[in-house]
Image (cartoon, rainbow, N blue to C red; front, side):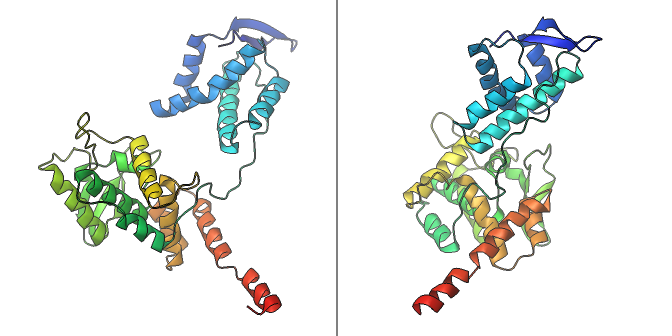
Length: 316
């Protein structure tokens, strides 16, 4: 890590070195942002390249031009979404330094990259989902588990982290039928639920029967490996098992991942007449504009302009 000098403004506006950037100071920053440990690790990963960039160039007192140069450098090698994440962390770091009176906010108003509001992952149609599900061997505990996970994600639009956080006791009953209470993204408790359709309920029951008697606090979906049998799955494991089944069905693309199942659920809701407000509630979007992206996708798919022009020109 570079020994970056930390500076404050003097009474006449001149920049005076006060101290060097130390690990202790950086840890103060991580304590200041007051987020989950997992999010702190995200900030660590995002800021590390910036400190390396400064160190490799011997920059001890970074200026606005240095921050812009860093952005331009990573912009040529990283995905736009990664650049945005890295620059958000850099801006937050310098904002905190300025608030503490330790350094000028040289990252203030430094533009990041403009991301398309289009989704970066593709989705499946109903026939493809059936094909993927039918390709799962349900005769084993692992296969039974994977089938239940895939079915739940494609009907209820669950994220990988919501799958991993689910416990056996989170399946509860309402007047409408069984539901699964979930701890959503950025939530501290399981205050929301999704409905469990009858085919999915049967799949979950079939899977749980392979595990014997379970405590309510036990993970709903657990590892079946000899080493970690019964332990909670990680998001990486869920993402990996979904990706494996997609590949087995012939869908091997960087744009087809576990998150594609959530997109698939959203598009299926809208294609079959669900209102945008209902879809927003189901996907647990705080801002309806996020849900509107799916509606825009659907309208684009329903656009018949090319077909109309083809019939007019070619008679087909």
